[in-house]
Length: 208
Ligand SMILES: [Zn+2]
Image 1: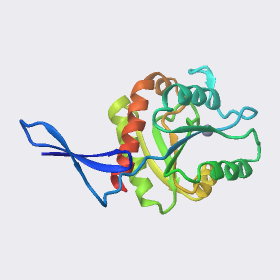
Image 2: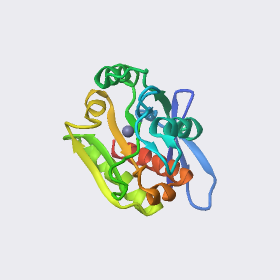
Image 3: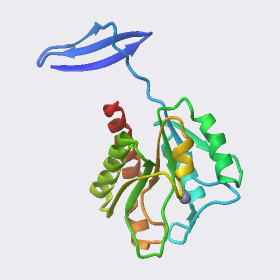
Image 4: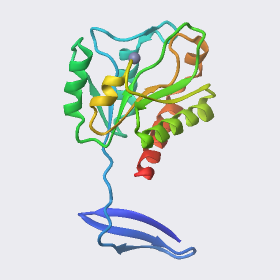
């Protein structure tokens, strides 16, 4: 028996199939089919574009702007920050644009000393659900592209904390690899990454 919720013209249906028989629709009352509201925010701004990766030939801003426009529009809405250098002010403005979204990603890559490698992500301190979601994302990066797992970190200070703090919905800042580590950059596969983001969104809504 397979049950799938289906919504058409504000009426909810359950698609029911018994093995070996046809599918049929059964109207169901009192079941809310939740519409997904996901936002992707490109990290950094045109006048301060984040780290420049020699291996990728792009800054964080350039890389994720192109990536998001090419790959993420079917999964959610893509936002770029206003070109405001003051971090707190621009995050505060962005939080007004994303306030009605359930789940908000900010897109980055890491950089340190060209030796350190791996995937990590940041969530707001105490948000246990997002810590689970973040660790799911990291595990999928290990499975999908063999990145070292640096795990999800729940923070309340430091880089990225401002975004996590002011975002009204659940927020997560992704650092899938180190842009100054040549091997990390070579491992990155755009299609696998998009599939992992999609799975992460599915995982998030399964926890709701
Ligand atoms: Zn960044």
